Image (cartoon, rainbow, N blue to C red; front, side):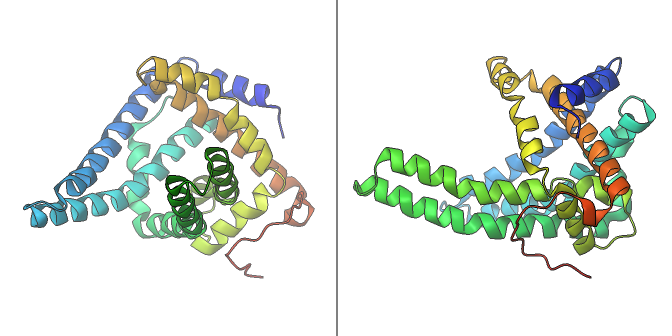
Length: 260
């Protein structure tokens, strides 16, 4: 795989002259996602009040819209992939391309989310128990932080293992959901740490973005996303050249069975 700086340089070269289109694409995506989150939060606000029915309505609407956002999340990835390969500005139409394959996209991304949630749920429960212990004075603050960091490790591993799924949804349209998730796992064997370090390398820009009241994220998100897209393209090229059996292997315990 290419070095982090090389991938970043490739991303910046692709974005050169196209920043406006990607900033606009990111703004629209964040705006629509924010509306969905607002509606969901409205349901939470009205819970326990005399507006119980209204709370249920908002929660249902927020849940439905959240589900409908999954194809748009896929389309956001596709916009970067198409631009990277065709050297064209971001196409707003790509944002909605997932709705043409609604069932397949929803099913695959939902399955991925469920699997990651299944790993995260025990971690959340342990975090709650540790938090209660901290409140009672039986768990120190240092132990609480250590436990929470340790509990995040398996969740991060699963998230990294399935990080290539949106790209594979576009490139391998003939594969079923389980096969796409399996292929993402195979491609990421031995490369999770590389992707983790790649994403971690943006932490300075993230902090700077906070200082700009998050406005800087309109530039940072396209930069990060295009860099990860370059990572995927190199990873896929390696996978196709050496084959699945020759990819680096590391021990993993993931809940999706291989269909061999």
